[in-house]
Length: 389
Image (cartoon, rainbow, N blue to C red; front, side, top):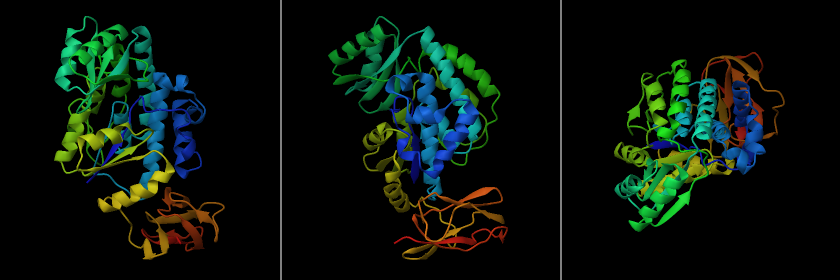
């Protein structure tokens, strides 16, 4: 079984969108900009580290880029059996799983980021990772500190994130080291997330969630607050509201996936944090990150080995030649500029049928177009012939 993992705030980095700017899936950035009223492309291409550190920018840019990567992977025919996202990444997972339309996901993430930014401005806080200590030791350190500090993420064995007042974090960190922790690492975030400091944001987010219609997910999504899979439309508003002030149970999430039979973990979005956590949490499994188009080829290979690639009948011709087929029945409309002899990349849209994009799952040279403008196609009917060698 293959699982999709979506990163949260802190994985963002300047220029993280550049490798994807010429990819067909970049079209999602334009849609997200329109839905949010913000220039998401500029955040992904031009924003510096300080600008991206602001919660409202980090969350929107990470969410959108994660879905760009998901769109590119989906175009290859890769399908997951279960999904999860770390904090903000839970919204990416829900959108990828079909529980939220893209525009609704963008709207919620923009509101969540703005609400959390306001809460962080009103009550400054930060987060740090405690390495080399188990959950109980870190809990004890937080309890012994005199200020406001709590466990915010149980990321994995030997990695627990604490959040709260900066002075209290420093005190708890020193106590944790006295108790045997190996290292403390500050995180590039702008608030004490998943603690009571975020209560004002939860109140504001609740109004946006109440106005959102969730749909049943196409695959189970494991929630942060209970590390349990959810598929139905009901309950997500309450889970997402609770998530703002409750710890992210990520170690337990990976443990649940392993227990359910997941063997391959794929991180979709910027960074490799979840990939590393998966390797430690599931040492007998396989974990890889898709944060650059160059990662798509090895991902497709790994997905094939995990039995997680779907192909429509008629796609394969023989070793070096491929057919791109229609995913639905309807009238065919080719894209402008596609011609014989043209080299195309995986995910390239070759036309539309019944309003649905026909994307090539293959990279190759166009040897011929097998459908004409206005032709009524059946599902799986070939529309283009490629040579891959």
